[in-house]
Each structure stands twice: as structure tokens, then as C-alpha cells.
Image 1: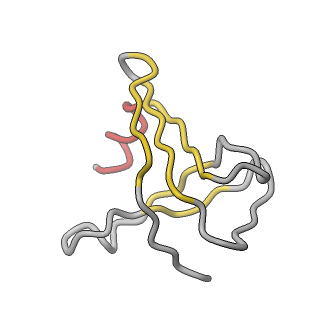
Image 2: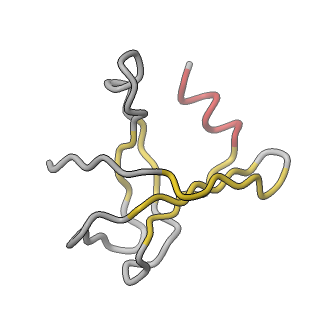
Length: 78
């Protein structure tokens, strides 16, 4: 499985418990709608803490987007 390091372009609070993260999209990166990927934070203590997220952007977009409930994020980190 290929690994990509991308920068966060935006971090938006959609509702009190819903976040949207938009990142760069690596060149030639392809995915199918409904597909998920594993994401981690590129910091020493977090790099191996991967969690699954489903893409909410479209494959033709020039960015990657993930939208999730913060309660789900809290449960994933426990």
C-alpha cells in the first residue's frame, strides 16, 4: 500500500460535532466513491496511529475531503 504525506488545506467545523478536513491530493492518486483510506498524523507519537476514513470528495476533485462526527473521532482514539 502506498503512503502519501499531504498538507491540510482547510479544517472546518460544519456543526458542533461535525468536522471537515480538506487536504492536498497527490499526483495520480485515484479512489472509488465510497472507498476508505487510513490516515495518521505525521508526528512521532501519532505516525503509527492510523484510522479509517471515507472520502467525501469526488475522484475528479483536485483535493481530498473527509467529513466526520467528532464523537466518532473520540471513539477511534480510545
